[in-house]
Image 1 (cartoon, protein in one colour):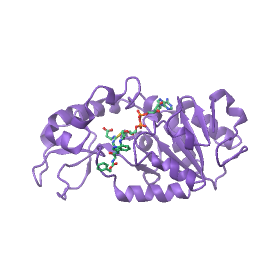
Image 2 (image 1 turned 90 degrees about the vertical axis):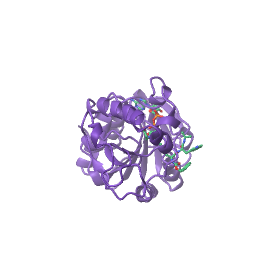
Image 3 (image 1 turned 180 degrees about the vertical axis):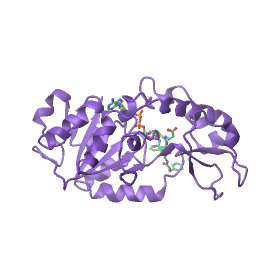
Image 4 (image 1 turned 90 degrees about the horizontal axis):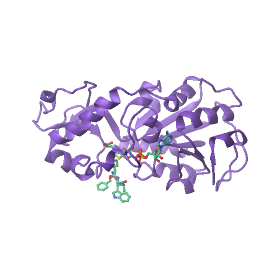
Length: 268
Ligand code: BV8
């Protein structure tokens, strides 16, 4: 596994456990990107951990768990409403745009994002090419798991508090995101796993690799023969399962790498 900066980009090589020697991307290469908050950091969306991280200032148990949210939905919506307000001002950055452009230029690329900010869709990636594995802050659902109210889109900022009660069962409505201690959608998990297992090139972009089961996709990809390339500002607990770790902001490193690996064909 090699750790090197963006200026080594030109002599892209691989000393990872499974793959060695340079490689190229063609239109037949199956590419999958597992993304975390780091890919949105350059858009102004705060990350969760590290300096300025969202989780530094709140007790996760009280806000981002089902029982914590239900104990005080008003406090929950204060936290999530503030995040919606900030996210609404953010634009996709070259990291998101590189993945969307890769699809537009005819490459076989799929994104599994842990992010709930909707920026990969806004960058232009097709809906069926992005799995929001931890849900979306722009969708709302009933907190009562046995209620059959449909999840619905809502991008109002600020959100009208009078709508935050379920019309069917009277329970509080909540953001359609995956809280801690909550199962991920099994259909999304199955689709993400299927795609990961058939991937040739697996990017791990801007994630601390601390939250499971999402972080596990990097291991699965490697185990099923993919070349795993991490892009981050620093090494992470996933670095040891990656063939390479490229240090630098993903808004710069991703497009440089893709340009290099397609012999200059990919550019935007
Ligand atoms: C579940 C949505 C079954 C809400 C989130 C003990 C060990 C292992 C696992 C567990 C455990 N105890 C409990 C668990 C399971 C738990 C878990 O993994 N906990 C961890 C913290 C120990 N997982 C769960 O609970 C999951 N469900 O397992 O169900 C179950 C059922 C019942 C009981 C138990 C288990 C649900 C997990 C989903 C939680 N939801 N968010 C919200 O956002 O409010 S978590 C949150 O973390 C986000 O989803 C986020 O996406 C995710 C991962 O974080 P990252 O995206 O990686 O962000 P982070 O800030 O951490 O890192 C940013 C990275 O970017 C850094 O590395 C930084 O260097 C880099 N970076 C910064 N700038 C840039 C950059 N890189 C490149 N360029 C830049 N410019």
